[in-house]
Image (cartoon, rainbow, N blue to C red; front, side):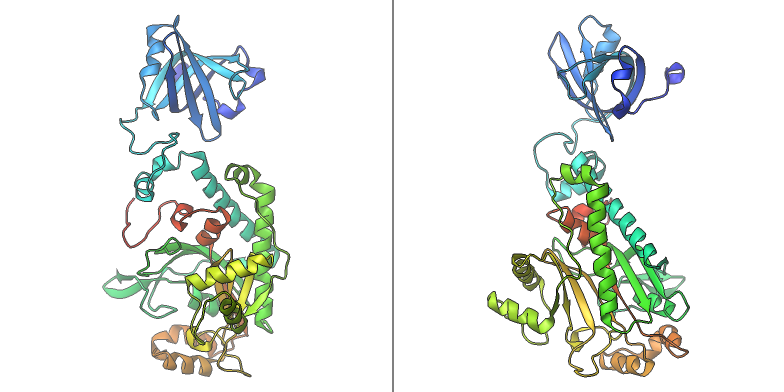
Length: 439
């Protein structure tokens, strides 16, 4: 039946120039309002919607369109007419139609209904959930974030790389590793590209970044933890101090927020978001100063312990009152940092490390790396690790390793905070957590 039809037109392109012309369109049948003598149908594509009006004097074959179930995919051919009462200013009077894919009834999840749905219901029916423009807008934002980061890092002389995701040893110990069978050998899904991106610092590829999945088998059921996530990692060599790393990272985030203002205005308006681009440099708050600020907020963080979620949120609120949504916490205790983080020579209790906080949550963690192999091995042993298990990594440090540093940045978390979502899972197309392996 469709063989002699003209090509389908995008709904967003139909306008004044098409008045009185025959066009062919296709999309989801969003809604049907049958008033007896006349029926109004809404056809939807990604770019928008268009009204289809079926009149009582049309053929029975055409009037049968009003009985097609909502969310079916329908193709129709008809004449464009001006109608100032509809949002687009134009409607289509159908002459023929064909159901390309009929939707079953009832729908497991409403698309345009105002009734809310539980998170599990939304994720179980993600294909329907994503038909909502405000849900899709999050992933348009996410795409822009990736584009902005790539653009910025390239402008700073960084090269995009891709490291293995099936590995023999974890960068942060075995507690949060997913074990897999690899040709009858034990292997793990990568927690991060940490060890490999450090190896690359000894190759001449000495300013690199990566946007790739990472995996952590954390037993956390929170709105901010997830088992598979997208990580924005970078590493840079020939640094004199951690400060050089901080400058690149804060620049990348500020550039990305400005990029969203310029390139994602439609999505920002749809989600009712007003983004502020921070002035750089953003504040550097030492770990000890953070403890003092939190004590003033009534939260005591024992010396030497990490900041938990509640402390991060309280610190974020205190900094926001000073006008800072984005800031670094620096100089964490050495004892709570991985073996590859450099210890301060003048005060070994603390390290050249940092977290980047945004709107009360940790976005990134990083620091200056230890490039002296004897000190790395000592740190490994103190943390109960056998340097022999990491020889593939340590070998690169035995033949000339420049001083370097970098970070790992949770891209999904960043989108979650930028978009003002209630749960990080909303920023992931098909999230993986303790209870969810499908779809």
